[in-house]
View 1 (cartoon, rainbow, N blue to C red):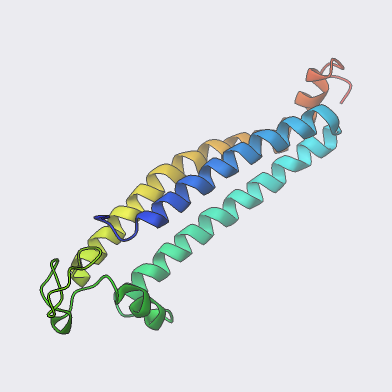
View 2: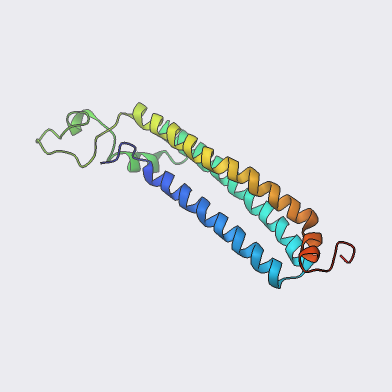
Length: 163
């Protein structure tokens, strides 16, 4: 039984961060070995764009989820539909135990305040993993965008001056 109904969201964030890191490394190594200096440099600008989009999308998505759980925004109905199975109400029976018919729930039921607390915890965890990686890979991608052609030439034994 999970204590946090948003645990799958955390796992998705962890997995997607790992996939991005692996993709970043593999694509950069491939282009560095088989690509041209200009192609490696331009790949840096593509990484910067992807990272900016991902950060903006994450902040937008978390903001919309927070608004929907609070009863505002355009996704309120979808949030209610998703939260109904895990939130407590008087017609469902005792809080965190079993229904009025005496059937135990698969997971504990939460009050809306508890769900909001889990949401803040989940957002904090996602941002704690995502933001440092975003900053690190954003800095690397920016350096690649600016100096990728020089690095490519240097690693291929052509020296700095030929690029």
